[in-house]
Amino acid sequence: TKDLIQVKNLKKYFKVGRKSILKAVDGVSFNIRKGETIGLVGESGCGKTTCGRTVMGLYSATGGEVVFDGINVHKLKGKEKKDFTRRAQIIFQDPYASLNPRMTVGDIIASGIDIHNLYTGKERMDRIYELLNLVGLNKEHASRFPHEFSGGQRQRIGIARALAMEPEFIVCDEPISALDVSIQAQIVNLLIRLQYEYGLTYLFIAHDLSMVKHISDRVGVMYLGHIVELTSSDGLYKKPLHPYTQALLSAIPEPDPNTARSTKRIELEGEVPSPINPKSGCRFASRCRYAKPECYEITPELKEIENDHFTACHLFNDVK
Ligand code: SF4
Image 1 (cartoon, helix red, strand yellow):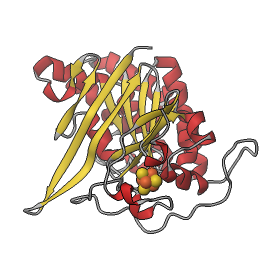
Image 2: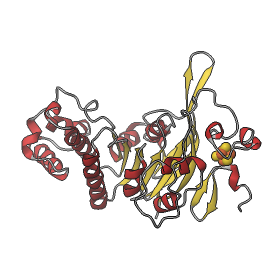
Image 3: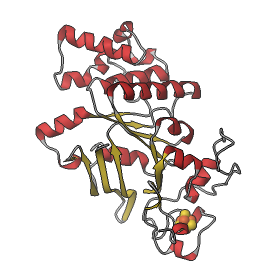
Image 4: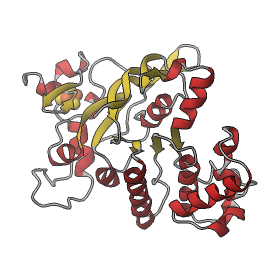
């Protein structure tokens, strides 16, 4: 399948004070095929949300580029820019914070329709009703306000607002993290159904690995601004290669006793170190139980260890 998105050596740095630089995303490369879901996981502070927003063009890039269907997202102007803001949408973690409390749900859903002048009058109302229906809400909800809805329903409203633009690509920025576990599955299932119906492509950002497994075709694991492992969802869960991925996965319950994964919990000591002025070498070295002297000196490159299974770790230096 053709790539819809190519992320090439993407960097996003923020200045902190006079001398410090926070390297939130520091040289990240991956592609997203048309109709595919890429999961992006890691603890908070690993750069996944900044990565998603830079891919969307909401942040300018410090370096590298994002190519969407052949066009550079960070160099868009005029009509091309308007077109991209329709074709690519984002769903946020906290649907309540992202829904204007003074607007009715119908007007919220139609906000993009209005900006882009897609429909007016009766057609606009019909489209709102259709969108409500698509996400499991109904006509009567159009005249209500966000505070009258539960967290899961508010996320459905956020999804309807994104869908209104008939997008091809949606960045799902931790869309389920703030929801109860029982509701999480409903939202994930809704996203999967919509993807199937509309051929959507997703970048699905989450810190919880168990849900990501169900929705993602491939998963990228981020640590301190780097992707440290990238492979198929199955490959990652059955045979994680990077010590960080192994530790992350060991923390979630093992549902399938036939997988090769060790069920022993690997303790991850300490917090993610600060991404401000990061040291050279492997960024995971301070928490890695396999760290050797070269790990503190040389930054490991993301390389293909097995077919379509990439990792950045010196333990695999000898593997061709
Ligand atoms: Fe651990 Fe070294 Fe691999 Fe980094 S490169 S994950 S410190 S073994």
